[in-house]
Image (tube, rainbow, N blue to C red; front, side):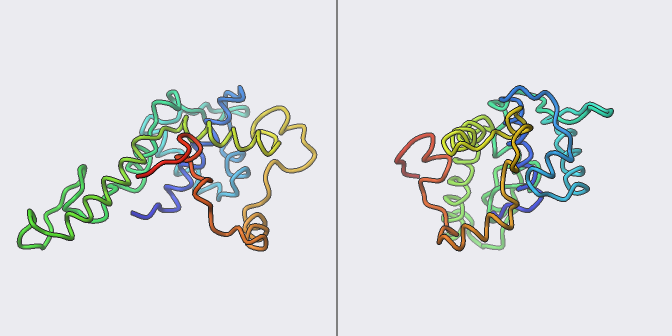
Length: 199
């Protein structure tokens, strides 16, 4: 399973809507979402429409309109969003729980590859279905506060002289120069919520 750009942008936008809700912002315009995450507006509009049709977000029209989560962030699993946008989590069809396809293997019940890919599918689903949007928002807010970064969509961010976040390209360049192009395992949501863990 590889998360598509569409899936990535959907999740990043939902996380931002979750942050907005936590800081008391009722609606966020699609242009604000796109600017905050450096995403193409037209593509993001299509993604937001798909999220709206699935009942994950609602919109309000007009000059001061925008989007907000349609239900509490704790009721939206990351797995639900990934399946909606990118389809099944399984790396091969014969282990999919939602879109099973018979494989070409003559003995599916004893196929070593199928057994291995079932473990891969279960590990991916176990993580993505365990964590909710609220979990990711909580960890994101905790890290922003720890680093004294103004919270996106908050009054402090609106009044900040500097941009809330570095442009994505610039941030990647700085991280690469600092030798941090790879993430440490302690950067993940699981570690933030559970401390040391094993899958």
